[in-house]
Length: 395
Image 1: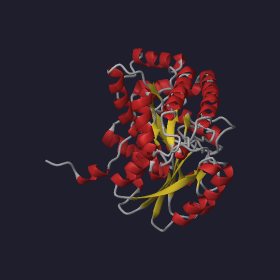
Image 2: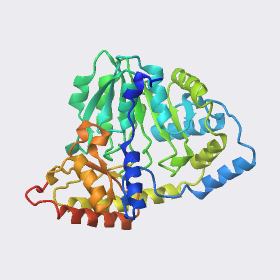
Image 3: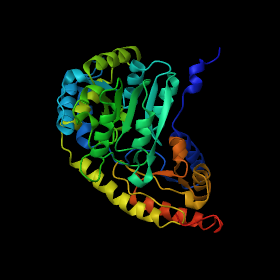
Image 4: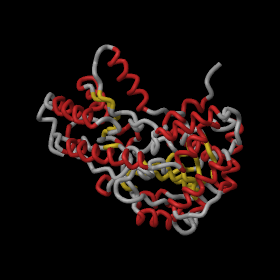
């Protein structure tokens, strides 16, 4: 037997590959500063854990509705309506095991081979992986560093065609930490409002924002019925291992996603849905504390990156990633990331792990302790001192 040809089109996440290499170095006695993995380094808030324990004791251990429990879907609908300035109901919500199923299921339900999908590049690698897997055509839209890693709107406008069926937005953005302004979203809405396409708005980092509340394109006139909002609990509530997320979309698409759930996972775990209820309806003070700590780390770490020869770093407005430009080092993204791991003991990701337009950048996750971040800066500084001065130039 051979694997199906479509498996050759399936990508992966480099972060997990780098983590494996870092663990191998640690097994040989090396101390590694882990800045490669994108998950909060905080514990899940205790009231959420307690809710899950109660749910287990109460017998929430059996199959539930494939679309998700009605009361959780109602809670999500209330939350999204309030935070995005829209009016939706439980029928518009699909509860799924993590955020990725919304990417996969939406594309499965909407795309035919040969359809075009516009997506940010650099961007979350699963976007392109799923597009290619389904035989659709990926159309990358570059981000502009000078605009805080906003989309190149001229390139976006020129890339739209009669074959465009999906536009992916991600704000706050992985890997750059950029946030799309309301003005940019209004411009994008004006380009696509009358086109026969859908928008997948990945808003998984919506609560991790440092300047106000990020706007959602779903809240603009005429856009709610064209938008799929991806959100969840992993980043906001440090629940990455719980595997629970949700999509908000037109009811006709929610029905299709539910059918895909029936055929794949049957349902999302019942007790985790009770924990998610506690997350949405319970106290939010630990979320605020986490974001405040991310801000403290961001400020110090990015200041340190900007002091390194050959580096320059735009201050990220959301998420927990720094995405410095490293062209001034004279090294490629992949070479520098590899050497930082092997020679300096700092695990990070090459910008090219997020697409071709990521060349010249690295991604660091500052979801690590302040002390470890400072140590990472010292290690990078010492490494750069070994790079020939003729190679390094001021960025």
